Each structure stands twice: as C-alpha cells, then as structure tokens.
Amino acid sequence: MKKITLLFAFGVTLITFIIADNIRVVAKNNSTTPIKIANSFLPAAALVAPVATAGSGATYTQITANWNSSVDATHYHLDVSTSIGFANFITGFNNLDVGNVTSYNVIGLTDGTTYYYRVRAENVCNTSGNSNIITYNTILFTCGSALTINHIAGNVAPINKTVNYSTVLTSLSGESKCWISQNLGSSNQATSASDGSDASAGWYWQFNRKQGYKVGPTPTWSITSISENSDWIPANDPCTIELGSAWRIPSYTEWFNADANGEVGGWSNYNETYADVLKLHAAGVLYDNNGGLVNRSVYGGFWSSNQNDDTTGRTLYLESGGCAFDSYPKAYGRSLRCIKD
Image 1 (tube, rainbow, N blue to C red):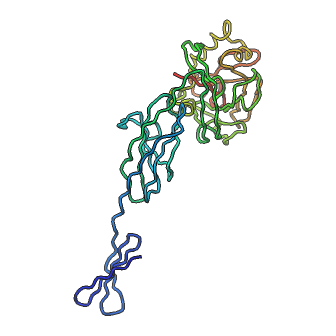
Image 2 (cartoon, rainbow, N blue to C red; image 1 turned 45 degrees about the vertical axis):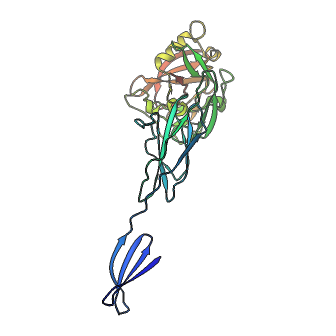
Image 3 (cartoon, one colour; image 1 turned 60 degrees about the horizontal axis):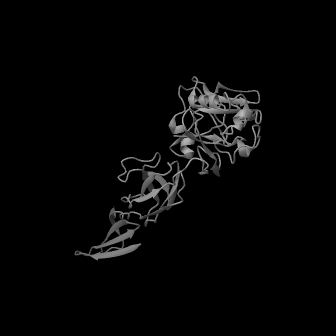
C-alpha cells in the first residue's frame, strides 16, 4: 500500500491510499475523523505481446508451438493456420485457450505442410496484441514408412500411447491408396489371423463417434443405442483426428472393392484377409449393452464410413468360415483401419 498526502487550503488534507490499483481518497480536516470522498481505479497496465519462438517436435502429423512468457499473463491464446495471413485456421486452433503454458502440441496436421502460428497473452483485465508469426513444417510422409503417432488420452484416444504404425501402398480399394496395416490404436501388426492380444487388437469405436475404447472398457461405456440418419462425419473421424487431415475411415465401396480384389477371386475367410497386405485379423467386438469384449480370435468387424440405416452401419465381417459385408447396430464397438487420400 502506498500513501500520498496532499495539502490544500482551508486546513483540508487529501490522503490518497493506493491499494492494488484501487485509489481511495480521504479528506481530513482538523478533526481526527477521516471523511471518505471517493473510490476510483487506476487503468490496468497493458499486456506486452509474447514472443513466439521456433517450433519443435515436428512429425508427420503434429508440431509443438513455443513462446516466451509475458509479464502478468495468466493464460495464452493460440492460432494455427496454413495461411501466413491467417485467412483460415486449423480446426480447433482459432483463438484456442491453452492455459498458462509456454508450449502446446498441435495435432491432426497433414504431412509435408507449412503451418503458421501466433499467440496472445491474456489476464482478467487485458488481452495483448498478436505475437510474431512462426513458420514450421510437418515432415513429409512416404507410404511404406512407419507413421509415428503420439496419441493423447481424451475424447478420441482412451489412453496415452505412442504407436509406430506400419503402412502399405495398395490398389485393393480400386485406386492406389496408403493404408495403415494394423488396427487404429494397436501397438503392432497382428501376428496371425486369430491373434488374441490387446497389443494387436487396438481400440474400438461406435459408429460416428470419435471416442475410442480400450478393452475394459476404458473410458466408461455410456452409449447403448444409436439412432441417427448420418454417415460417419469428418469431424468425428478418429483417423482424421489422430493421424492427420489426409487420413479417414474407408468407405463401404472401398472395403467392398478390397474384398473383391483381395487374394485370388476375393477374400473367403480371415486366413485370406490376414495373408493379404492389410493383415486383417479377428480382434473381436465390444458388445453394445455394456462394452464387454466378445469373439476375440473368432471374429473381426471393421466399420466403413457409411451407414445402412438410422440404427445400423455397414461393416466388413471376417471369421474362419467366411468374409462378407453386413449391417450391425451402431452402438457396437468395432475396429478401424485408416486410408490416406
């Protein structure tokens, strides 16, 4: 607290107390009792824009944005764009409040792409201007190389996990496309058609929902029925969110073509799907009423991005005695593979 005393005529003294930017003015005459005149406020000091520093940790699908702290800032807002003028923004990174940190991991990006980021400081009183702009590139991905992804637990990945996904370039779908040749969320490619391990199974998803589930289930299973007239929308596509904007769930037509083009005359059972380049195996499914695991090592089910009707989605079904397409309730948890445009 600062005390400033000003003397005026007529025996009146103005005493100003400055307490945390609050100015209290008290008039005091020859008596010993102060007389309150007014309260006022000092204008808050302007925040200095933070200095953005070089990006780090670039992979095929993510970068880390960095900056220096700004005095009196309590949190920061981050913009990320493919335009140096910020004419557009990466989904989720338009004025994103990242908290009181000086670095942030930007995920879901496209390989071999130039990105720009800037930050602003903020506190309860003020927001700073924009920082300088940093330019940073993701690494160019070549299909056939391992695709390294740092999954972060949240509303898509059920746990923190780093995976080196195997990939393959194939025309099974009718066009030359890059696929991951192991299940999304798996630690490794399956070792056989009936591989029953968690490491090879990966995670499971309900139709048109971005939340993935680990066997347990983790997180808690809460949706037991789904009824909506919609294919799998891009905003909910775990392949896009986790692997990057060029990746997506295969369509029904792409799965249908893969089945027809696989092996000699098409896939007839899970031994043939596993023998082919995609290494599809029987990872089982999660039951719709409680998320319990059923039929691992016996049966495999892979969602397409297309629905059959309001309550069922189109899926590739495989087991020892057959391989076909069917429609199953959207609330079941099934495996995902991803394809890159």
